[in-house]
Structures are given as structure tokens and as C-alpha cells.
Image (cartoon, rainbow, N blue to C red; front, side, top):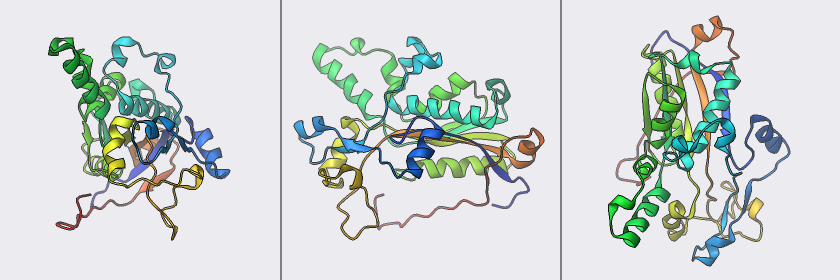
Length: 273
């Protein structure tokens, strides 16, 4: 990507099974803690594996959101909102600073299965679509993350959600870099968010893709081990604040790193994902 606009990372935010703050996650990593546990309900309903990341329950009401806002937000949007607010604070930015056409948001989100299933359950039970609440359409669209965050944060620039399986968040970061390097945006909130409910994980479990090392849940995720037996699902949200390097320096922003490149490839005809 040839451009004179260098890209800085100035803010970090995360909501995960390792913690709901930067400090908690850092300490968990330094101490070698795991956020993996067992959801026995999965076994009861027919899952092969009950292993999953155990996330804290988000309390967005404490962050000033009310029923009106929450009715359009399902898991991914909630996790992303927490991470985005944290990243902005970490970057020393107020909402007023980003409420202009020079700031955008790009997130990766792979699925929003739960609200879709719930809406169909209501239809099957009550036999009329009018009983499905109006919030379900906004919760079930894959763009629910950026759609909700753009409104809540007052974003006026680029705003879209990417979906490319496990690479979704990485592609979101790459597109944010491209937007800044091209001069189209001065700053972009980028990241990824993922739901972790049974509705979204059942088909994956059916593939036999999950580890069944349930006697050692905290040692089950071992991708480079000769005795690995599958992956462990989890959810959460993470956000980076990307800024034009010179503008970030001018405002005295904390600069964690620079993103010097971004690439992608597809093994056409070889793999579905």
C-alpha cells in the first residue's frame, strides 16, 4: 500500500473470557490464566463438547444505555460497544472528537444466529410475524455491530461490518488501514466481535471441530500440540483505534505501534474457510 499517510495504533479495548478490562487481560496473560471452562447445558442438549470461553455478563445499563438502545443490540454489538468505549478512553478521545465525517468504524462479525432463531420460535408459537418485536431485525443483521455503534458513538464517516470467518477482525483492521492511507479517513475504530451462544455453535459442534478434552478444560486449546484434538469456541469483542500518524502525534496521542502493511490471499478451490 503506497501512501504517505502512516497509520498509528493509539487505543486498545477488549471484552473477553480473560477479562473485561485491559488490566485484567494483561494480568491473566502474564499469569498464564485460561478463560476456558465447561457449559454443561451443551452436553444436556446434545453437544459433543461443553468446552467454551466463559465470558462475564455485560452490564450496559451501567454504561448509560437504556432499554431503547439495548433492544437492537445482541451479543456481538454489546461486546463491541464495551471494547470501543474502552479503546476511545485509552486513546484519550472523547465522542465529540470522532463525531465528524473524517472518522469511521469497520468491524468483523461472523454471525448473529441467536436473534434469528428466537424470532422464528416466536413465529412458530404465535403464528403471526406481528408478534416479533421490531428490535429483532436490527439484532439479526450481520451489520448489527457497526449499525448500533455508529448511532451510539455518533460516527459520520465509513461504517460497515465484514464477515470472513476467523479472519473477519484482521480484515477489518486492514480496511481501516487502507481508509487512512488513502486519505479517506483520519481515524477508524476497527476490531471484531463474536457471539458465543449454543445457537451459533451447534453446527460447528456437529462437524466434530471442537476439542473434547473436557477433563482438562484449561489445557484443551493447544493448536500447536502433537496431541491437539480440536479448537475451543469463545466470544467477545476487541477494538483498536487507528489514526493518521501525523495527526495522532499532533494531538499528543499515545502511540502503541504502527501498522506498516496488510495483505490477504485465498486458496481458490482448496478450502471453504
